[in-house]
Amino acid sequence: MLDQHELFRSVDDQTVSETKQPKGHTVHIEGTALEATEVFAAYWRFAAERQRMFLKRLQGSNDPALTDDPVLSAYRFTNSYRASDRVSQFLLREVISTPKQRWNDKDLFYRTLLFKLFNRIETWESLEREFGELTWDRHSFDRIDGFLSRRKASAKRNYSAAYIMPSAGSAFGHKSKHANHLRLLEWMIADDYPRRLRNCKNMGQAYDLLIAAPSVGPFLAYQFVTDINYSTLTSFSEMEFVKAGPGALDGIAKCFKSTEGVPPEAIIEHMALYQDRYFDLFEIDFPSLWGRPLQLIDCQNLFCEISKYARVAFPTVNGSSGRTRIKQKFAPAGRLPLPCYPNDWGLNEKINVEFGKK
Image (tube, rainbow, N blue to C red; front, side, top):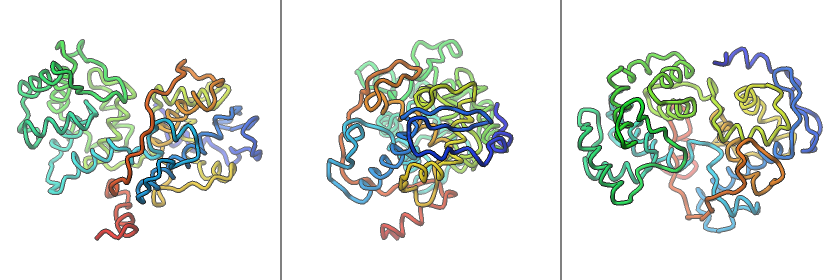
């Protein structure tokens, strides 16, 4: 695992080339010169324009043309900040920070993982309608397994298509994926994960704990630790740790002609640390999240999104996945509700003041 502090020290002060031309741009990371493609400059333009689209919707714009970018206006992409996305906002509002906010550590962990294992709002809402308040002491494997099996039999989707969940069948032996995932959640609680996570000193330790669970791989462990960190169970900086997922690896491959052996996590850290320089370099006015810069998780996600964007905008630039189409179309849905973020980010009061909410 990367030593984050060593990585930060290894990036010298001369990492940004002086040229403003997207082609031929050179980026120095860990003492290695990486030649950037035209997608590298597009990464920064994409981040700014996607954030502007989010803010326009938040301010009540109903104009279907939220952007002049033909790719962004035609296809669906996640927000520049992961926590602003619809599923993350639901997790924050309805799963973690309900009005009473009375959850103990075990309930916080149970509710967060029960939601994220399926990562689908409709599944959570159907479970609440069927069983009421979802807490560990009310948990019943047989009842939830039976309910989800009936949903599946009636052709209702239990899982999000955002990413593929491993079946965990080899670990827990059930035929249905959802039954194995319920057993995984039970296994984690039996192994005292809520207490052990609270005792972790940094995000890297928490990641190591999560990846040690049966069937939880690197990508999933990083997603889980990020989501748990939205709660009060942990309070790590999102600049402490990053793990590149498959989509991010594809995006990195499109942004650079070769990574020359530089770890993808080092590249993501470089992007986060030097974002202001790159926005200045390419003369981009980036509207941050009420003063919060892009974090490691956001830069990781942006690599995933630019890999999709480049399939249409830069079809001749090859990545590592071989994918050539974007499946989801963009359909603006009007004004967004006011977002909320973890309290320790210090953003909620700023948002309430700006929009006149007491």
